[in-house]
Amino acid sequence: MPIVSLAGVTKSYPAAGRAAEPVTAVEDVTLDIEQGDVFGIIGYSGAGKSTLVRLINALEPASGGSIHVDGTDITALGERELRRVRSGIGMIFQQFNLFSSKTVAANVAYPLKLAGWSRADIAARVAELLAFVGLSERARAYPDQLSGGQKQRVGIARALATRPRILLADEATSALDPQTTHEVLDLLGRVNREQGVTIVIITHEMDVIQTIATKVAVMEKGRVIEQGDVFEVFSRPRHPASQRFVGTVIKGVPSPAEAAALRERHAGRLVTFSFRDGDSSQSQVLLDLAQAGLEFELVYGGINDIRGRAFGHLTLAIRGADAAIDAALASIGRHATATEIEGAR
Ligand code: ADP
Image (tube, rainbow, N blue to C red; front, side):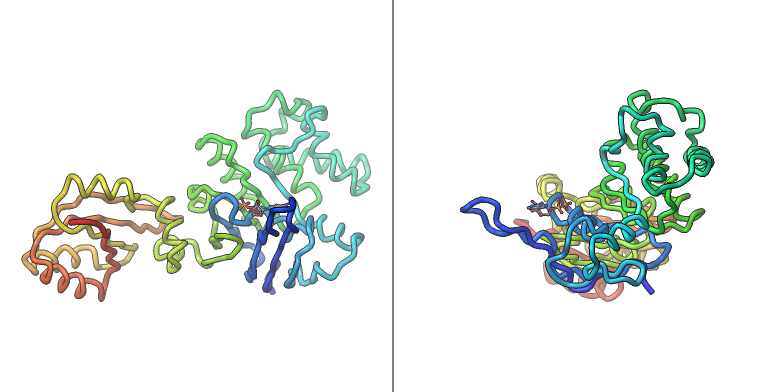
């Protein structure tokens, strides 16, 4: 049974001003998050990611559809039962949301106090959590005395204090530099592997998904337009909108501006070929072009690595008779993905 299951979930906000339209922030979203997943939710700003997380966290009611957390339909619960559901879900934030007037230890202790733990149990649990996140030495420090990465590690310790089974991370590394991002992602990976916590991670950063996620859902305009295994979705996005999104975050696909610059510099037709680990088609593509008597030049490319599996894109400027190029592309299309960059030749 999935640990989080959404079926036909919609969330609308009423019109704010007289001229304003109601906003549908989440529309007809259906997805399952399995126990133990690191589930990434990606998409541009305004796509509905944060709203989706607030629905899972029961911080806001859905306008339609059903949301099951740990087997319970939370759309049917009253406030008291919702508090119990929320206590099984930890949350970390972009701006850390620590109490600046409390020490590191007091920040981590806070949810345990709320939950009515004894002083001795709180002290033992806080020590254990600070050791886990590598901050035992900073227990008496205040948030202002910590680096961004340390603050987020306190946030993680606090979120895990009451042993939730789910951790929601909303742009949790977006305020951090790349090095610190990797340290925090390593820690989240340990939370997932060593403590069996299911992680739902919202981000607009490809790096985050690439490093840690096992599954991913791509959102646009409130809808989940594509979801599945991270390698599948990123190496072969099916929906045009996810192709656009993925194209902007992975290496090797020229942006429209780069494509225009390539066209200025190179004669011929520009075609981007996509390859994946284990494909035998890379050399075959080049062989097919050579055997068709076509001239070509490598003009753009890049390789991406998703947890040890590679995929890449290679753009060639191909010169020759149009009919010969069309025939070669048709034949190559049987074993590799080829996308021609449109535009004046
Ligand atoms: P993301 O997290 O992907 O940036 P959000 O979930 O924050 O997207 O927002 C999705 C859409 O819903 C946006 O158009 C946003 O303006 C709107 N929205 C979010 N929260 C509210 C709210 N409380 N009231 C009205 N509109 C909202």
